[in-house]
Image 1 (cartoon, rainbow, N blue to C red):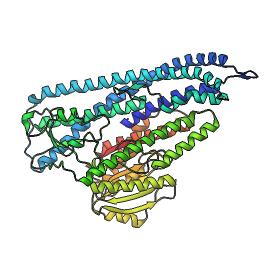
Image 2 (image 1 turned 180 degrees about the horizontal axis):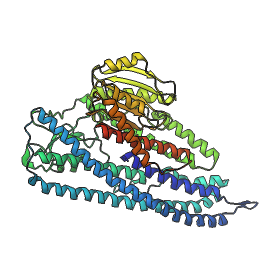
Image 3 (image 1 turned 90 degrees about the horizontal axis):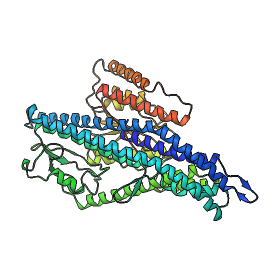
Length: 550
């Protein structure tokens, strides 16, 4: 599971809690007589249903919450390992370029690693405990909102709501508008369980990743880092972007290590706030370059980009809000009214039918280590693909050349699940320089990479990275990394693919359902797991990036 998968699982639980509540109100309707609606009898029936609802939810979701909490703990541990491995690669590359680094003795770092082990377990425990409190809160919130709706329905009926459906819609409108916002932050803002889980797992995973990086720096006696400069930094992090810092938080640095500010002070001033998208990398004196200057034009563009992102996030929340109201309202007129608002908000910010944004705002500078120009070009490429997906049900592929800083292929498929490349298209891929092409396309069918997609990366050395975007805005990224085909490369790949496929099938072998929506979701998860297993076997780097990530 990724951070996005865990957030989606909590959202599915919230949706089911609401759906079950509305289903009870739709199934057990109040009886209408000449004197009006028999609310007392209806309330008695609903209160009985509420008791069953409470009991069933605790039994049903208790085990699910436990499993998700275990997944979160494992994800945090994996993030630490990933940070450790990525940092060692970076340090070894710097040594090849002449950086004079030498591993310090094992004894000198043993105590530091023990301390980091304790820190990681404390982070996992704190995250899990917070999630358990939030999970208890969402069930209690669902109970309270259900009980409130039972009694409010009669109040609204007596005030002239008219039909039973309209009275229930008025009673549940507030709850449907905001969702089950069971978590209250220190500033008084209330958030849903899914939103809180998203923030918590991203924050914990990032800290674990940075801890893994810091451990490896400590191992080599390096404590200086530089905050990466990217096109759209967080406003709180902007003062530190491009600056060199002494990492006294994760790398064991101290003030005497150089004439640079301390990481701890930068964090206290706002760096690495929850959901922060910025990051840092190792600063190697004599090899790395630092640039913390910004032109007026760059600052203006950053301000506009942040404003645009905030507007898009607001619009996404409105789409979600009116989407709930449209789906769960009982009155047909209300359903149509709210659905029109959903479509209006989608058009306001340019969203396709799956809910994903048309304008791409991904941080390709960091995702694929691109220059600012290349990253903006790739945003334009993905915006073009999203626009195609918003108006068509077919695939489309665009190949972007890093050496030419421009697209060199643009092919539109004839079906929902394939793009056929001509012999001339294939010659272009064959003749392009090694690791020169980013091959991007859309999947209207809402799944990750197909076998045909991965075959292209394996067969053509010119392809450096694959990306695919789905209607809900989810992106999948597969980087070639250190993979080289070699003489028997395809046989090795074919064997690795078959093994990954079998292992993924075993993980999902016990799943049985006839629900079409559940089947689609499970198939997508299966493809995701299979591709991650394949990438691990081949030394590639595979990532799933959620709609609100970058």
